[in-house]
Amino acid sequence: MLKRRLYRGRDLARAHDIAELRAMAARRVPNFCVEYLEGGADDELALARNRAAFDAIDLLPRTLVDVSRRDLGCTLFGSPVALPALIAPTGFNGLLAHEGDRLLAEAARDAGIPFCQSMVSTIALEDIAATGVRHWMQIYPFKDRANLAGVVKRAERAGSEAIVLTTDASVFGNRTWDRRNYRAPMKLDARNLLDVALHPRWILDVLVPHGMPRFRNLGDFLPPGMDSARNAAAFLAAQMDLTLTWNDIRWLRDLWPRKLLIKGILLPEDAVRAQEAGADGIVVSNHGGRQLDTCPAPIEMLPAIRAAVGPDMTIIVDSGLRRGSDFVKARALGADAALSGRATLYGLAAGGKPGVARALEIIRSEIERTLGLIGCPAMADVAADCVRLRT
Ligand SMILES: Cc1cc2nc3c(=O)[nH]c(=O)nc-3n(C[C@H](O)[C@H](O)[C@H](O)COP(=O)(O)O)c2cc1C
Image 1 (tube, protein in one colour):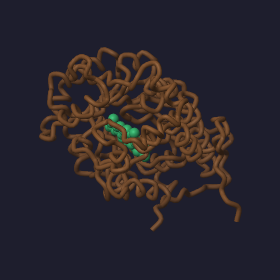
Image 2: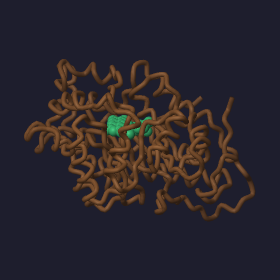
Image 3: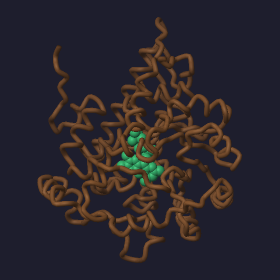
């Protein structure tokens, strides 16, 4: 049998799938960045299951259907999107490429999909919104409510369409790969310092001339000059409000007049609680397997969650999507759209904005091919009868 060969060059256009962009990314950025990006919690069983769950869904093809024209678009909160996809909120993107958040946002804008910016991002949310992307802002439940309200108000002034409250990361997951690279908080060990020195292109892009990226959306919380990675990491851990309950969602609902989503839902009863609390949507997520290990894959829980909340609530799913066909499966099982987390970050790390654009083009072309192969020319018509769960 011929061995599968991964493309090893630098020409992004010759990366044929997300796995090849991932391999390019791993060569381009230092080890500690790769492990930050890849890491899952504990034994990484949830991380592996996120992929296995998509692989266990069969697509059911209908033949002799006219698929000469295919429409990949759909609507999200009443407005059109070119694909049922958004870029997920991921923190510290400036570590993978200089101004990583801006590059992701611009590539999302060019592809006609929204960008959800992490609160732990390294470019001010106003600057990202100004790119013209359909901008969503993710927040964490911080103890300091006055300052949290300040970020929400900033998002309102900047024209953000939605606030996404992430609720599954207040207690930090145990990512041992990532932790092992440091001898003290945010201080790399000798092996990793040497590895950084072996990546001069990354040093020139990320560290020179700007230095380590700083957290531009925690500025209201951090004392002036304290927004470095090291200070922010300690600050973040101390700020997470572990007392938060469903009763507190009302506070945010009253504060924020636009779309509100709760991210980190895995159970139908929590989805219903989110609906009752006035959320416009939910993100069915296990944080890409980075938080609780040995939990179900979000895609496995999706049909029961859709059944529980009914047809009208907006449901976004994430965790483990690496192929365009995964986005089709997500739609078939009840999601309005899905978040791309690592898939687009591989593109960012492999080649900046052109790398993200390449990742999105791979996903787009795979969705288009999948619709053709299953005999369903319109994304809007993808339904449960397009898939079968393998037992
Ligand atoms: C490097 C990295 C950083 C992340 N940072 C955040 C974050 O700041 N806020 C958040 O809500 N989710 C964060 N997530 C989780 C993503 O939003 C998303 O749920 C997850 O990446 C989806 O899984 P996937 O990577 O398999 O696509 C992060 C994920 C990764 C990989």
